[in-house]
Length: 133
Image 1 (cartoon, rainbow, N blue to C red):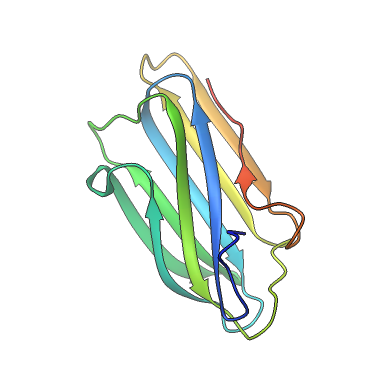
Image 2: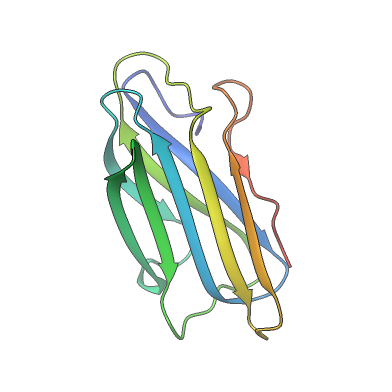
């Protein structure tokens, strides 16, 4: 959970690191519906025009999915993907939230994947995939 989250609004951050350029990348954030959860936006630290973003509800989760467009490349580095949402008043427990990321290196030699969950509020500020090539 982003440290700027408060009793009515929150932001969940995924930090993705890669040591190699990527030619395919899909990042998914799933925010468990804990009451009143509705999207207020999303962003990533990579260029907006390089990704297609879809946001919708499915199976009790608010789902954000970023897909790298064909012909685009993610350079080596550390990148943030963030979903923003309203929720019912009070602290929100993020332990049921989850993320996945799948990628292909620029050389096409390796396919990478990582997934996980989020710590309870106060235990960690972000989910760090640490997945890299």
